[in-house]
Length: 234
Image 1 (cartoon, rainbow, N blue to C red):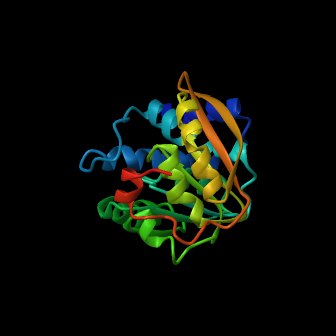
Image 2: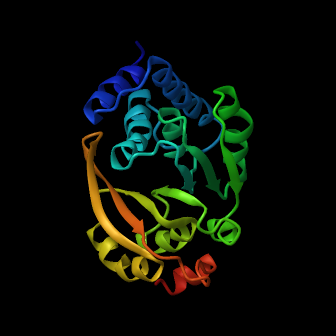
Image 3: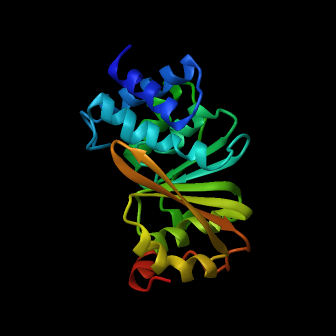
């Protein structure tokens, strides 16, 4: 067994997740594709196979422990090289996954090379999150985002996409207490309610998933243009 698959297998056991050999191989194949493409395109600073398995693939799969995702419509905002969305789709093929990112080159690689080669069906939105919100308002059961912006900005970008009763899962590092405190007003104003924080040990460090339940529709004036968000955060 190669190092990436070995790390995946031990990590899945630690996360109490059970995948088929085919799913584990597909995860490893996607990890290898990221590493290979990274030689000519800036996808990640993490290139060692074990680190890719731990810090990208397994980190993404922690969301399977946070919520039941079977059959859900899932939007991954700021997906970058496809994390966490693609590993989630591999682990739970029943999800209806949409990837959103503003960088055309990365999206072209995912859409035209990486995911067709692995036979992973995905919907793509290429552009800024605030630009697609009007046409996709309230369309998703679950919206997730990983290391894109501070939580108050992230909530304004992501919560409009979640239908009432759905969830926004913000993937963060260990130092989230200040972000969560400063985002409390934004969460409430945008129709959300902070529910809980899930903690996972990934690569020897604590990673957190902030779980926000959508309890009311987001007012129509949100999200604002990103420059306005940064200038005057909620």
